[in-house]
Image (cartoon, rainbow, N blue to C red; front, side, top):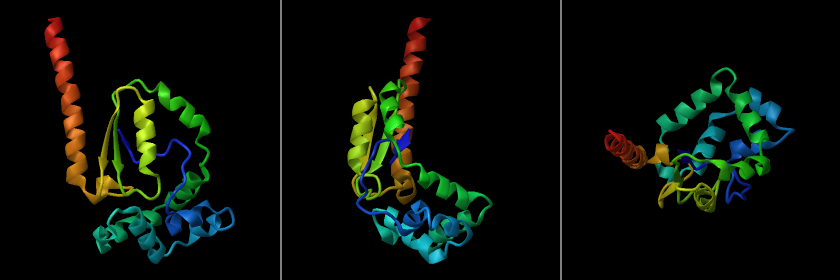
Length: 167
């Protein structure tokens, strides 16, 4: 299952301020030591299709995660990885049932990248949630879980039918 995944080169419509800071070689060391709650809040709101869905509890959770040992370093390391050329060449080699979930209002990784995954992964299924952003599983967990459950149930039933036929 891929959810608004990186894998192909892309041009963001908007990059959250925290991501910009983490990607900057000169500011990344500062991000590892200091990342104010206001920057975390602005970054989270930027990733949602509807920023109004970002309440204090969501911001608190993200901010608290940045305080855990090693997490800020991991964020900086993640954003240093921006060359997707080697990875994108291997996507066509994926040979497993793949559900691709994408927020139609993802301004970080464009929905066209979801289409690209769908084209390159044979037999994949793409579900786009028109009103959601980069983290559809957070914005509307019920909708994304329903899509995942349906996908898994269809594969489980297909497996049951195949094994019942063999007997």
